[in-house]
Image 1 (cartoon, rainbow, N blue to C red):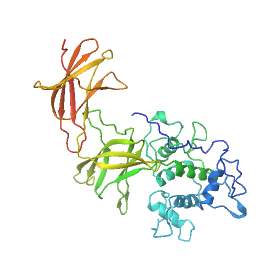
Image 2 (image 1 turned 45 degrees about the vertical axis):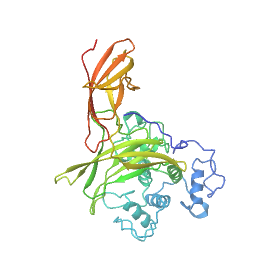
Image 3 (image 1 turned 120 degrees about the horizontal axis):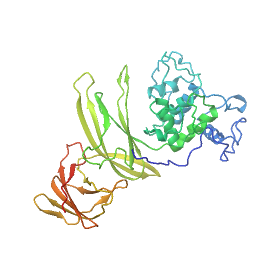
Image 4 (image 1 turned 135 degrees about the vertical axis):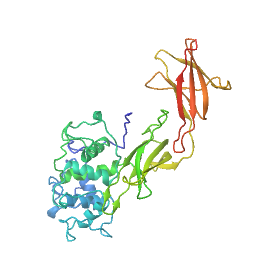
Length: 404
């Protein structure tokens, strides 16, 4: 998959970065000097009444942040109102008398946080670095990027695990680095000062995502589709990044799937979705949808909008060439001899000597390619209308016997 480098604002400072010269001068706590890299975050969040300290103007930045404290801060950052209509989360160690009960209950309802297998939440347990990464990704709905081995700088962080994938998402967005260049410390505790810095940075750099949810309890998204018969469609174009976020089964039913679309740059892309209707033990039917993804900058931020598409778009017909073959001209006709273009526009690929033309109607055609050395090659181009859910024609090109 093509690697896309993205910058979502100023590259963020990490948990282990050196002292910052950006710290605020308006100190709120006597134990948070300006020289600490988390000072500006602590003071700014305190000014907004997002975080609080202890008696005697202490913040205790070196203490581990607890799961209850983290829930209370995240609920405020998400602008939730946990004091209104919260469901009992069912954690046996979080009673209504607990000061963090409502925040924990609201975040559990939104599936931002969860408890242990034994039914506890552990509100006084320290939060680990991997756990906080997962909380931040879910709370701020950060892009669910996929990663390959070359994009993972950390030993012992596996992208196919929940916390591991979320650690790499924070790293890709510039929100955090590791304890060292190749070690994240996924099971180490997060201090209150570090947590303040991470939360502030996440709030500042989060891109605005768009979600398309399934529209019924029996529907599932199964795949972001590519066209098998053309190289036209890129799964994640330069305009947007898309990922399917699967729901889960709960006592009250399936929570539903959604497709998360993250805008990358202004422009129009295309998105084709496949899904299933029905449960696994029933007759499953397939369904499909196709969209345009329009990305525009509004008030300085990229925003994505999905528009249902009914069109069939111009589609690439790839003509395979040898390395030393350079195209001068392409003559394009129907198989009955009707000339459609005596100088058909063509484009090249960055990673191949091949070229492509674009077709916009079904039929059987012949493309005669003249090379700069005077030689020619002929290709049959068979174009079929796609099924209704696909945006591009089905195209097959075949090189004919040498025309010379």
